[in-house]
View (cartoon, rainbow, N blue to C red):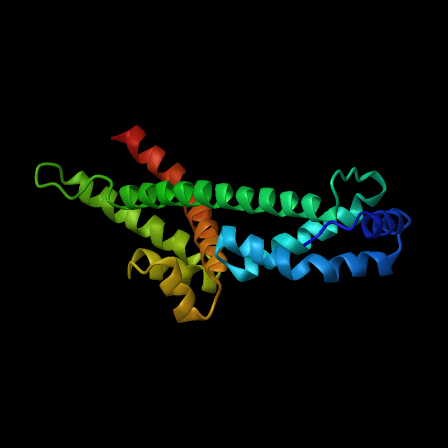
Length: 197
């Protein structure tokens, strides 16, 4: 898209004054293209739309202080690119974190396997399983269902999303919530068992 200096100047001036028509004109001109750019990074149209909408919202909120060099095209492209990259970094971190937490819960449930030499570990295993079930029951129904599909059925996020007609983002968020809640309830029990063992 060619850089139209006069158009940019007029739109920038209007937006800084709070002119909604100028803002709508900017939005209509760049929205579709920016969504395409964000989707190229994220691979997810719904996330791309959120990123672009957030970019325009931020622009409107900061309109009196915007410092645009080289036109709106460059400014918006860079903003959307940066938000897309931040989303991907957050996704990688969250997945790594969730994976570690899930593994920690699995380890906790299997803590002190039943041993023929030590009858007390039978009781410990039963107590851990009971604590886990209580913690699981405390989760909201949909959150619990999603977590169990992941833990017991071994389904991928995409498979759970398809089965429950949800977005993968929602599935991932619900699993993270479940892991946080379960961990917060189980860690004190685990620490107590370790202290007594």
